[in-house]
Length: 276
Ligand SMILES: Nc1ncnc2c1ncn2[C@@H]1O[C@H](COP(=O)(O)OP(=O)(O)OP(=O)(O)O)[C@@H](O)[C@H]1O
Image (tube, rainbow, N blue to C red; front, side, top):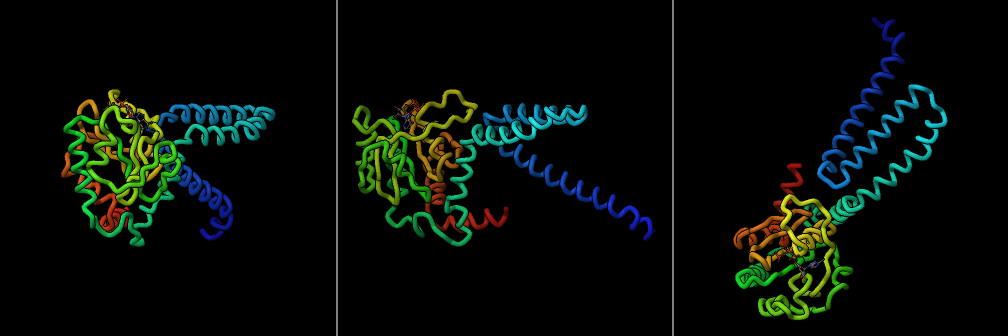
């Protein structure tokens, strides 16, 4: 037995290393597939990878040295560059998430403070309720840890305390600032009439228009929480991390905003993080 092991030791080691490598690659590819299978570039990715594998097999099998060199020196690096370009929005989103302080909740770091002392959420929900009942379209981004300076710069600086009256006048139809989005930071309105990045994500519901797409877009590129009121239906929606929750009621909105903006959520997030 011992002599057999000594004799075949190198072969066993080679197979063992190969099995470990295959397992690592399998996990990596599976994670990549999970992250990207529902995105616009998924089919392109599949096409590029299948062509690469077929070409690699053919050149290896028939020992086509020139083609094999081209594949290694041009196609493979080109593939990496193409992936970065194709998945630029997804990569930006992933980096924005990494940079958000949400992940630091585990250290007890808070977002808007320990609690909603000034009743901001009540005021926001009352505002949203009035806008919805009047069918005045609105797009309100609540900044969290990612700064939204570049988006605020596309609009008009306001720098005023959030109030139902002020926001109501901003979104009153045909007023100069009603078009575009509002940015709120720490209960203050930073700017109005801002142009948000529009999400290019495929959405099942084709009736979703630009206002909602702009809300989703900003939540994809930052950790902002975006509240949207539809001009057409008066429905209230919430966009976070590229996800749109439509037709939310005011109680749900209050609970979610408390969770998303204030500190006691940090505890919930710690649980989320620790539960993996
Ligand atoms: N990139 C953008 N950033 C901010 N606001 C935008 C952007 N694009 C469109 N909007 C706002 O959305 C309005 C157009 O909304 P549209 O009807 O296309 O969207 P919707 O999602 O169907 O909303 P609604 O249900 O209110 O009609 C514009 O008048 C403008 O105020």
